[in-house]
Length: 240
Image (cartoon, rainbow, N blue to C red):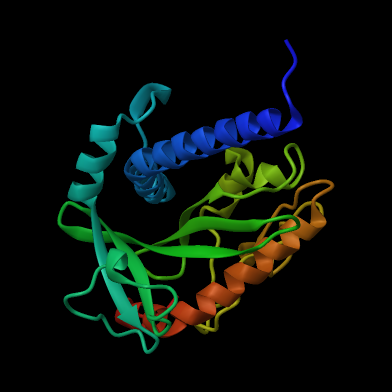
């Protein structure tokens, strides 16, 4: 049985419309779950950045992430002068409007602040890289770092998310002995341990120089934004 071209076009149009409606409906229904998953991933990475991970190599459950985060992380908002803005949470901020407000997270252990976590992000080679940088309570020493969202090349720039790379940051310092912001630079090749700059440097990734340069650049840029707050912490702790 043969059909006219008009019938074929009408049939194709109907199938397209039905599929579009089904896809739109599925996207709408799944969005709350997708948003929840993104929030959970951010919470998990904040916890990992301060060294809070499941024991025995197990994975966090959804409830463990939420419970541990609620017990160990305090959410704050600061202004560009480093002052805490009362009554505001990071989730309240609109990136398009609240350009003079910054999110920051305190890690609490035994009733004391053990670390400050800063969101960091910027351009790598192919993508925007998002992560969290955790500084010890002195506001200077790196406690940990995670990169949880990026589109860098697997096996090359994508290595930024691997522990062998992120562990290199632990113990490094973002400021010199005078309290001047230096940030952390990803070098090409290996860090020279005899260099005075070694405390501010981490090993690079072979074949991923542009990704590494991007990480170095946006870390310094983001740390400059948080510098007034970090200076306050350094002064309270008596310098570096």
